[in-house]
Image 1 (cartoon, rainbow, N blue to C red):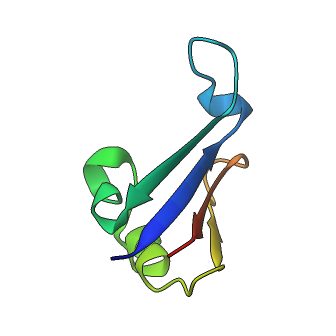
Image 2 (image 1 turned 135 degrees about the vertical axis):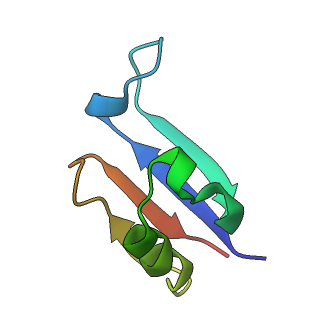
Length: 66
């Protein structure tokens, strides 16, 4: 199964004022979570070690790790 690390920076600060890193599988990436169809396609097609960077938020990226 594909696994990804998601990084959120300053514009996605959590309640502890820290950036966040979370691990997710491909099911996390859908429109209800703010990803448009092109983002979902690009993320789903990443090779291991590949990265996707948000065009809308300068501090959000996704890296495929498995």
